[in-house]
Image 1 (cartoon, rainbow, N blue to C red):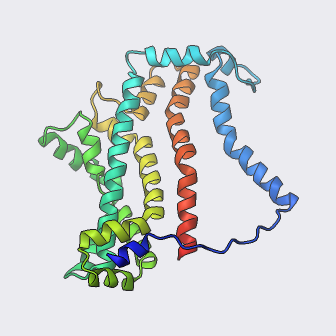
Image 2: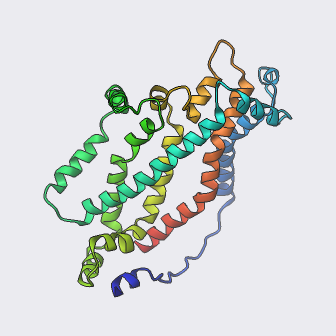
Image 3: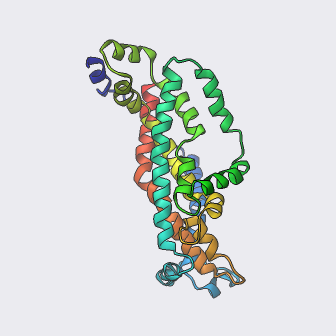
Length: 290
């Protein structure tokens, strides 16, 4: 497949000359950095202090020496099951992210580049699903999960989110502009099947959009609270449900809540650190090639 082989070759792009930043720009970036990092720093300070220090006036501004103790207390709480909640949330978020990216890329490619009867009507239906508030579907969705015998388990918070109308529309819009029709026609002339065209030409071109969609999906599933709170039983908590248990009751241990919140936020920060550079690089690569 000559055309497919040529699409994988990287072309050399002229390097743009960097322009120097002004002191005002550096000051603005520093201010934005401080404002963005302030909540994380405050959470770390509160998680490393005793509860009496948190409630004091003025509040502490430097981290204390109780971080390890508070984290041990979070994982030792049998009513919260925080370790199990982290594992459950990681499984749910990862499965949903992979499924949404793959199905959205396939459907987006079909809506953007394939010609079939009813394409526009189906696209309107997909867009219409984005206009329905999630809260309206909670009761019928719970009834469906109960009839299927899935209520209470992780399947009930995973299956309903394996596809995404927003993801399909997002990938379709990106595919329309990022993939020329001539490239697909040339691949068909070479004898490539539709799946081969998708796997060898379309999906690599959709990689920047897929990275962004994957990150947004992972964050959405990780931070989801309402539906897991309704659908899951006591033995299958997620991170947000576990945090709600930490803050429940007549007395709230703020140090315990902050330590749990820190542990629940840390995986998202790690995802940004590990994959953030690849995501930004993919976006810039797609912008330069377009």
